[in-house]
Length: 180
Image (cartoon, rainbow, N blue to C red; front, side):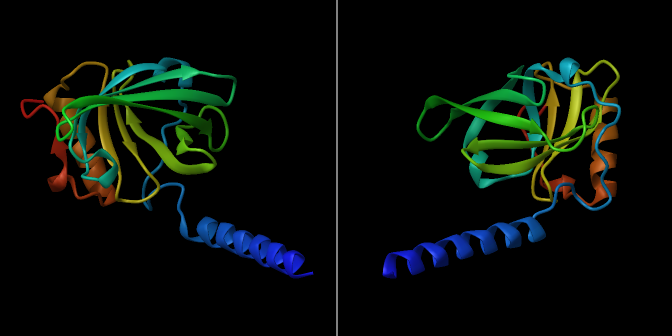
């Protein structure tokens, strides 16, 4: 009987935690909208990180790239590689991305840790799918990505203005290539 009560309490606690997480977690920052129409097939492939807001998960990591490929219609693989300047070694992590809403919209969920997913939103992309502005669910995560190791000044300024209008602290962006 003790074991049953413990299992019931554990299940109830897990259920409550899931409900609270869903209520407090956001899918997209207030004032932001995902790109639509969005063509995931054109987004697949290798991207270079040009700039990012500082975060614990990418601390001391440089030369970061992400390579996206299809697993099935609604699920994609992402391989993230970067150089850890403290350990002086290359690191690699593989994650999974799922469509968060309907197809054709730049809203996804990404996970590197099993069943735990975080928001991944494409807020802006150029017509040729060479440059992208990506965020998490709030104002803490923002990335500027490029198919190349640099980004044109006009695209950079366009992305910065959009991010600033949403409320991102663009003055805190870390630039991977200072000349970018």
